Length: 147
Image (tube, rainbow, N blue to C red; front, side, top):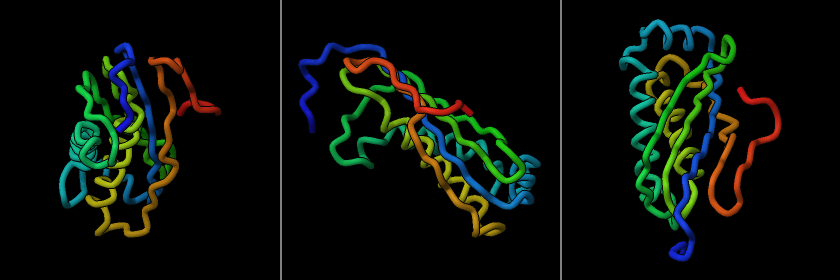
């Protein structure tokens, strides 16, 4: 792991997103709470939070972080696309980008798992960092409009 012991702790924030493309009927079922496995968005939210908290166990060489906030939100971007948006915060010596990306990825994978019996053709795409702030490198925003 990289030695971050000389870095001054600072407030750090990262936001990430993932898109899940699916049949319109599948997305309708998610929002109608009509998926056989249960409430997809509630389970995926908890899974994303849990994923962020366990990032250091999943990604080699990531520092374990004492996260102060993890949020996972869902937006119906269009009739076939579910957008997963995450935000992680910490006061520490290293950033939380990996935690935000992991939260988005795990939440998206959970949506797939819960809906795969109805729609095996779902695709998870565009997992990306949208924003980071704090630390020596300061703020960064992804190019293009925010969703």
